Image 1: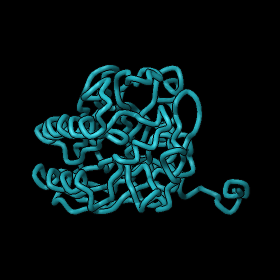
Image 2: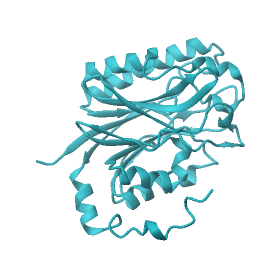
Image 3: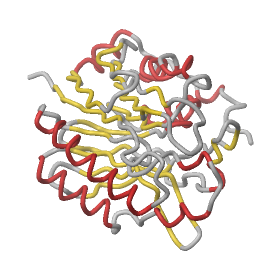
Length: 289
């Protein structure tokens, strides 16, 4: 029997544009995602991934300590507990990116992975942290990830996570492949004029080089008061040959659905023996500081 996993990506605009009430924004974004998650489940999704720090705007457009208040512990914070309930309710594996507080003053950009029974499986912390114009001041908010590149065994496949700016670094994408990932999700927040020319180039290249499926997510809309650019959506799935399978619109809330034939990974790897033919002993410069 073929191993078909129906996967979903959710891209969304800010639910309270222009609001300065952090608690209200967070509550509204969580409420908004409840219907989108239910839509994914109604469409038969086995796995669903949300966008980067899904419950707020992309606040890294400014440097303000007030945003620390929106961070939560994982898995014991209210949002991940709620998502564990939703995963169980819908019988759906969920990848949930939030702002994580590890201890007072230590914060990470993190995605929790929850299985279809509502069990918390673990988390991935974003490794590569940008700090650059226009308005990507992430080092103010996030410590670099320290949990490696975990892959989570689920009923619907082996799932890895790579977050936003991580996608510019092929080394971590390869680590996920070596760790057995069959589907890699990349929840992002990226704007037109900066990275759009790379959006459909880098991640299909990771899919080809590592012969797994990739689900890439970008939020949509222009977020006040910063207006650093248009989050251009176009969330998509691509297969281990780098071919686009499904793609969202540029400017609307949307649930993207694709049926991923995980047996295709074996088929492609039997043709292209990239993992067999690697020469790690010869890559002398990659791991030097």
